[in-house]
Image (cartoon, rainbow, N blue to C red; front, side):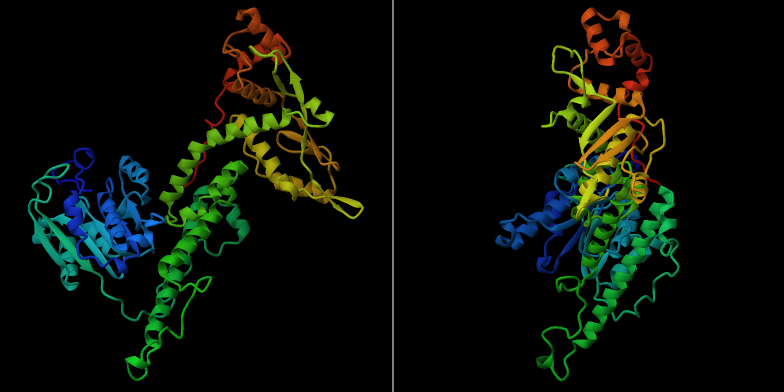
Length: 549
């Protein structure tokens, strides 16, 4: 994406100059696609260059990819959130926002870029650092940038391009027929990164003593969210750096070990020494980075610093994305992006879990015990209306049968997850009145150790487990039970629209009948009106997921 230097930086709409299709195709002329694996378009705008790459890639590879409709492996970076949305709608992988702050050990065999003119030098110098050995850079910049090296950065770029025998072609009318027109003369740069020389010993360049790498587990668990982010990013970067050096050293050694003994005819068809990663796959920097990313995304999605507020269905959604996220840099930007996406889903996810719990607790089972779960009332325009009672019987087995002796075992049948989900739902319903309780497992472990199965106290309930596979829940707080029932009954349209908005005396007789039947008395209903900010408040407004950093 180009922004002409005379335009203010913040004027994104008027400074947006997409690459014309004819110029994009010209930039890709002469590329040997068989040698291209990973591709980057920084400052991608709407993805004109990425679109052109995909077209050329599919033309070159033909029917080999047509059956699966595979495109090129492209990473895109774009600072404008509206343009990022366009890129994502096109199906491109957007891995970062500001290219100049992008940090990664991933290397690219092709970088195609049309950076902002006013900072083109910085972008191109940055891109040169991300090329693989033998990788290609194709970039546009203001012609004046190369013709007038009046700054240290411009001079560095000029010398780097000259040392690398870069091809430079000057174009005067490249944007005169573009979507947005300009007569600025541009330079088209083609640069090929040289093959690397024999590298130094493994770990020579690693920085010892990373801040959090060796913290004991109990100290890491005590970190704040901000410290935790810094800690896990520090560990990730250290691990990636180690893997990159290991593979680079291995590749350097392989070049020596695979030299012919006497002549080319006597060389080995494969290296006698090779580093592999799982299923005998030859190790590469990009594969190693991807595996480490996957490891750290998986770890993040089990960390209590982040996941304690999520119900199990939302955690499952995150875990399903681990494979996809292995293609995204494990960075603060992308961690924040994931949390922002989860915040969008939290409301729907929590509300769905509330309704699922309500249906589960009031559903008719084949035994009569379930009847005590329900409080029937005269519903709005329906007779089939009910609420959850103070005591609820649910199917939740906390026992394993070892021979003739029953032993409480709260880890079976996902007892932990089910109880934790119940408590988390009521944390949201609580509206932030109390702190989040992350000690469910500790509570159940203590009860198990002491052989306690009755009246196990958690934040909102007393749990009692029975050998026949049921659990009795008793609410400790009648106000939060009322909030739960109100939320569910409103969701099922069993309450009049005026519920909680009018005092009892101001309701018509039909509305009064429903309100009194539902709440048990006019006074209890008027309490809902008096404290509507609690009983009728949105579920998740005060409980958004947050991260530090």
